[in-house]
Length: 262
Image 1 (tube, rainbow, N blue to C red):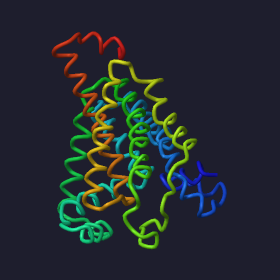
Image 2: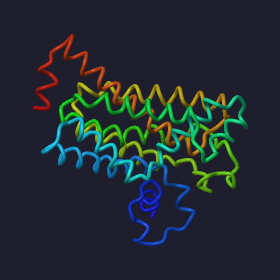
Image 3: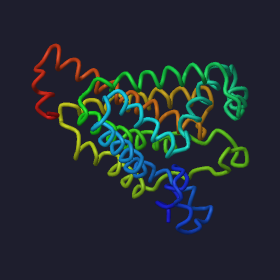
């Protein structure tokens, strides 16, 4: 039931038609957020692979990005825009929270989304198709696992009745934390060559830095912070992979990368 609740909340696919889920289950969906990455990341990989048979890689990567936006209803991107607006325009805790709750996007949100999408597109567009596919599924699941730990690290910054989603997530049990860990790390073990494993360090640094920022500015987190943390952790994962690829090609052995993705 919790998995179904997670799929209903984190995607716009009609899982709600399967059965009605009681509201209390939505408080415990975050541990299964990395599991939804198998679905959203898998859809992106499917779009990448199929469209790459008839289109250039740059176009297929753009279509893959659009496919996730459609599947999730821009849930996380909306949070990222609100995060940029709030932390960019707010000078106090109360003002920052008020800006983040405002449904209108501001200049910080617009500029932040433009820079985010440009970086996301440019970091992977020149990589081999098989490598992009591996990075997409791994980055989606692993970054959601990293971001999910925010509910174990910080308190919720608003009152429950002030929440946009009208729900405050419960902290994870150790069993739920283990579930999220397995769902987030398993794609890396299965699909990503070991030469790229150091890329998982950057999302951890990003998560730590964002948590420190939220603790200082908000004394907690919000739903927008969760979405922003996921996307920024994912972006840092792609950045790490791009740095490793460039380093191996320029200073190491280019055949080491090409051997995996012929």
